[in-house]
Image (tube, rainbow, N blue to C red; front, side, top):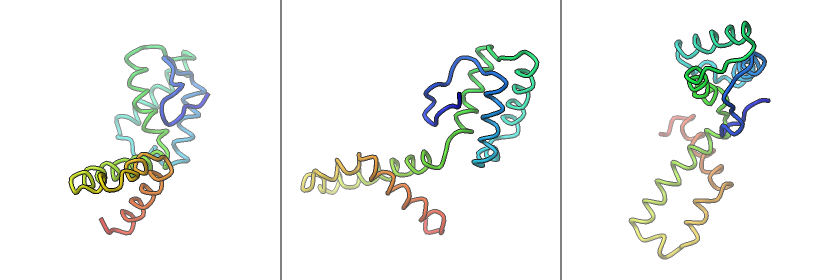
Length: 133
């Protein structure tokens, strides 16, 4: 079972096969490069431990692996949504201070719409990539 971006389905144990699949997906989506050296070493050691024992059930190790797995499986869509939410929060506070929300209450609905957040996030990602902010 592969894990989703929002951590639904992350159990209290990891098997060798699951960890190998997660590592392969992280190599493919490029998130492996964003881990620190300590996180990479811990993940590799966990794979070797799971290879020997079959499964990892230690609560402290599983909790550390959960945080690493959530970083590894974070995809571009979740990054775009995060950028969109941040910018929507900025716009919401700006429009609230300036009275725009009182004149146009529909804007508050737009800033909560999933599709609009994706558009805002994509726009922010593009602006960051070309160096305007």
